[in-house]
Length: 148
Image (tube, rainbow, N blue to C red; front, top):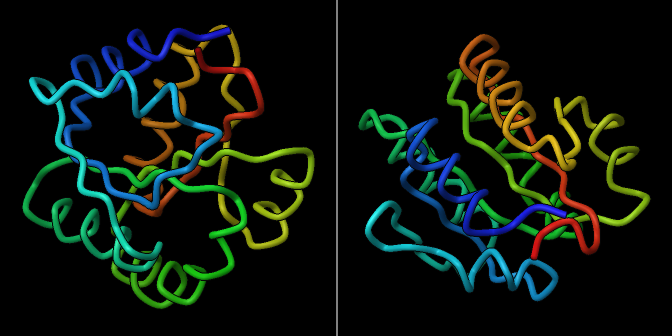
């Protein structure tokens, strides 16, 4: 179990991700409840492509960014992911809530991912390194009851 406050603290303070967008996901309510406007900015979006567009634009201006989504929204952003973010090497962190089908969906769409676990600090460092090295969006997968 990972405390949402600690998750945001490490992601924003240590790794310098300070902008997020997304469609609110009820399963990640604890993440939303612990957002801190002193260390981050969050803009809710009407759809995942808008969220990815906002986060990509912010990244281009030199700020690390991410989007928060449910795995069901992944299919809606695959075109943008493949034809914009991968093509122009714009890495955005995907924070994705999913059940058992999530890793299979990410793998079949060739989206690099890592599963969040209790060793969340090393997981965050690992996904950050991959984003910086590969210059494409990568996903941090959060399963049920992993964040409180």
